[in-house]
Length: 496
Image 1: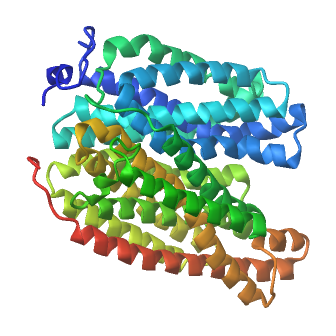
Image 2: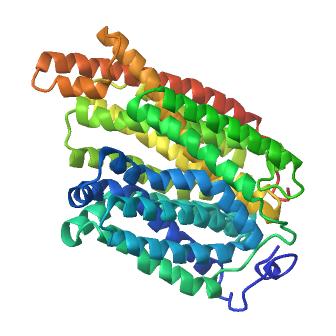
Image 3: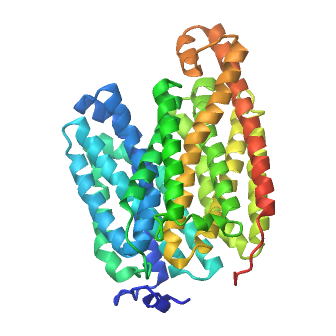
């Protein structure tokens, strides 16, 4: 299928789409850069916002988390909406909504205003990403070119995650916390103006009616499960957390059964039955579990065990971000010379070695070198493999369901990260308590109580590192499962 072919079979092309695929890719990547910055920038602005708006502890938690909740909860629904109404149209509409919500957030005077606008921004962001990823596959129909384009797209997203705290620090320091929201306005307005002439349109030829009940079930199910997972990390297990998880799972089962009965389901679950797609989704989910879970330990290890300042800790994290950015471009380049299945297997092997180093990292100064090697191997491995894995799911979906397929990959990532924080956090906490010989308490409390007591602090550091080792060993076990799944993925020819 060529670029000009986008005007047939349910694809409505723009008369002005003459700028070429590279310009289109650049326009798709620009909002992803902003969305990534927006995910990480609020942590920098939050203290100033709290000082000005005086939120309660609950409001402060929702100000920080609501964006991620809405992204995870609405991704699948918005991916399907893009398939139905047109991906370019959805990007334009949601870019406009994102710009307006950002402007309102910049001048908020009450905590609830930040919560509401961030929720709207989360829904808009959840729509833009799967629609953009689905369009990449249509703009670059050649499989190898599509993987390379996906790598470039992911590079922009990862760059935004890396520079977000730095950009946020500069903006907050010179222009106040409202500036972190205002920076999104011109980017999204540029998208609104340029998209009709730069991007092709693509939508399903016979989408059917949007099932609102399914959309509500999907949103409620994912929100409740993600809320339960994140709350268990922040405040431990309680009857409310368990109830939220149970209700979320029940609603999820009802949602799945409803999709099987509908002539035009909100989500085409048949996609997961396609050869290799289910295994690829498991690989994406499990790698998100290990990457998300260990990120918690890395931060505490640098600041609490090694005693580094937040700024110096951030500098020690730069090699892993650089490795991920380089790998996301190097992987597609190598994919033109090496079989995809072999390259992905090697990447998963690199990650396994990296997590094995997490299980061996020492307390002393040498631990910084070991940790850096481990993070470079893990982030480099996933950075090189991710474009192949995501493109594999999208490319094997029916053309009119590519947006829904892209949303699957992003939702798996969101849920995997939340699961990783719970599972690996629990493993580390149990080992930490066992090492200290106590029945309760977390390492956060332990480090706080040990301030000013060198002997106790040394015990807490050793106990935490033991928990880190246990989490790393658990990751090795999970990665062995991922390696088996990767090896069993059937090699497909470019024609397929």
